[in-house]
Length: 358
Image 1 (cartoon, one colour):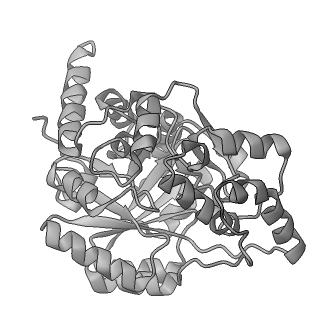
Image 2 (cartoon, rainbow, N blue to C red):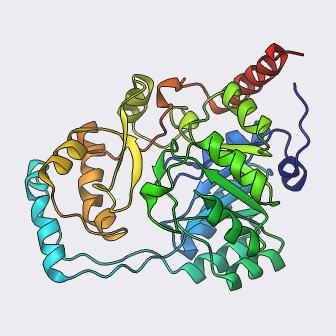
Image 3 (cartoon, helix red, strand yellow):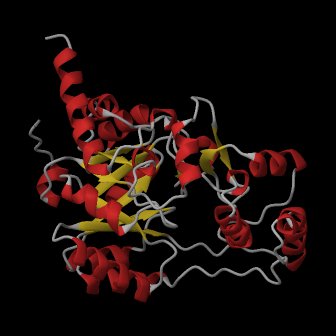
C-alpha cells in the first residue's frame, strides 16, 4: 500500500490522509466512524444536534468499538431574528405536506440547537482527538480551550478570506469546502452565492495564501480526486458522499439507492429543508417549494419546522420528502463496505500517480 507522510497523518497518527466527513443527523454511525478509523483513515461523527450528554454517550460508544482515535464536528450557533407572522406563513406553506403524512402542523417554532459551550466542555472532558467547526469560526476562547486540552482544531472555509481569518485564530487545519460539496454550505464571510468556488480552485488558492495545512473537501469520490487535491497542495481529503452508500452509513436504504442511481446533474443547492443553502438530490419537495416561492425561515428554524416531515418520510421510505444531502459527484457512489472503499481509493490513487508522465 502507498505510504503517506503529511502534516495530517503525522499529527493524527493515521496511515491514510482520508477523513470521514462528519455528517450530522445520523449518517456517521459508530459503525461507520469505526470502520474508517480501523481502515487507516480518520473517522468523525457529526454532533451538531447533540447536547453535551449525548456527545459523551456517543464518545463512550465509539471507545467501546475501537481504540482508534476519532473526531467530532460542531456547528457554530446562529440566532436569526424572525417574527410570528413569518413563522405562521412558513408553517402554512407546509400544511399540504404535513396533511399528506397525517401529521399536525407544529404549534411553535423555536431555536432548539444545543448549548455550544456545553458541547465544547463535553469534547474536552471526553478526550476526543479532533474537533472541527462548520458554519462559522468558533470563538477564540473555545479554540484556545480546546488547544490547551490537546484537541486538534479544524475550521471549514469556502473562501480565501475565511481561510486567512481561520489561520489568524491559530486553528490547526483548514478544510477547503468547494462548491461541489454535499450538505450545508459553510460560508461565514459574505454571501454564500459568492463562495461557490470549486474544490480544486479553492485548494490551489488557499495553499498559495495561507500556511495552515489545507484539507480538500467536495466532489472527491475516488483516488483520482484524492491525487488531484494532493497535487495542488492539500495534506489530505475529507470525503462524505463517498461513504453515504456504505452499508455502515446511517441513512435509509432508499436514500442509498438514490445515490447509486444518481446522474451527474441530479444535485441542487436549496434552502427549502433547513433554511440554509445545502446541496443534495433534487426531489418533489425541493422542486415544488422552489416553484411556489414559499416563505422559508432561516436556519435552524426551518430545519426544526421540517424535521417531523422528514422523519415521516423516512418511516414511509418516501424519498420525495427526505433531505438527501450529497455532493455533485454522487453518481460515482459505489456502495462498498467502508474498509473496502478505502482500499479501493488508495489503489486508484497509486494507479493515477503511476499514469502521470515521468
